[in-house]
Image (cartoon, rainbow, N blue to C red):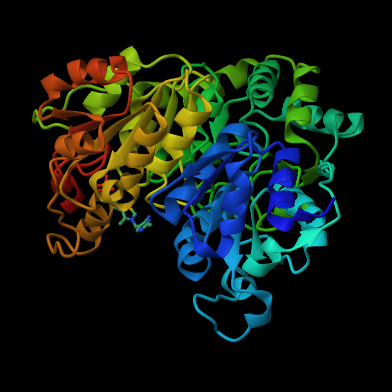
Length: 551
Ligand SMILES: Cc1ncc(C[n+]2csc(CCOP(=O)(O)OP(=O)(O)O)c2C)c(N)n1
């Protein structure tokens, strides 16, 4: 029976296991909204801004490992959503973004809201596919899903001319196409890696995002580290992959890692980089290890051949499933070396010591007080979501991630991801605590998605660090041009009242002493909560006050 292309598209999404799409409506894809109206398989979550819809799809994908799906309208909608496309590329997250388009007969005339998406997204998306013909909907949807997931995952844009969506076709939905995956390593490769590890006195395992964050990946990472007596450092924003209280935990590679810590890591005589792209932040500006020629032998294991040999010369470049490599290593334990124990202790001790928070001597409030209270109160499998900004530094530094906690941050460092990703997380995992750290800057970028949280009952606990400043930039400003503060001060609303106006519970923390009770109340409340934490801008980062930056 002939069917409308829009209905076929929705069937294809359902066939690909899509159960939720995030959107801001647009007249350019009305037919899809109409088709979704009758879908029992797919929930439509309507958002307040296309960046919110895109970020929710990214957040959802980070939780499920499957492509997140968003629908946005042409020019204005697509350009609003572009931040999520960029983040999906930077964070290696599978995203399929459907955008409306002017009718086929008008393409190229610079019609109302027309954009050439292939040009616009050329540097961000893995691919941009335009569906001209309704009969090709199944094929192109299948291709988009494969492309979004093939190593390395990323964003794919699918363009839907509005007249095409209304046309009918005889073709039916097709099953998803199998996604090609890198296989298990050969026994010879594992033997060589194990032999190199056994020979090393100071090996260092850097674990990254490709597959390692799954439950199997985490278990394999821990088992391999224990079997071969390896200290583990985690790549940028992957701090949750390994129990932070484990004796082999050696830290995480984010911004502003203390120089002595980097120097200690560089004492390694072997680096085993597993599932990491060895990007700029993780490698501390391509110094850990040194690019292109590391000072120590580098074993680089990734499931995407394009990530190996890109910035680094490895003595052993291995294209294989990183989790399979870790599992295989775990199955071939190495011998304990006395020297190795001292090396692990040398890396672990300073990290463990720095994790203990104590109230600031000047009595001023910073996010440490919230983190300290959460350390006592958060459940073992709570999901933490962070927007971009210095406020998240207290969580990274002082919260002992259990290995079961999830951390959803933004490798791409985009402000605005926090609230939308929290909503997506709470919808996907309604029984887990979703604890969201946000700055007063990011709060008014996409904080309006709190309305989406309230509309869909997403139980998000948001702690806003209200320091009256785009603090991270103020920090850079104070370092570069002491005391010349310009363009970074903010005058804010009362965030507790702001939250209440959406229907959330609003709370305020104005002193260190008030933090524990507010955290307890926020976690006990059923429904969204906004906590206005009146942090002191003087505490600009967990490692320095403004006065200390002046030196
Ligand atoms: C979308 C976006 N715009 C600008 C920036 C640059 N930027 C990085 S951190 C930051 C300030 C964040 O301020 P806030 O949310 O108040 O947190 P704080 O740094 O004060 O802790 C800015 C503007 C960015 N990363 N992303």
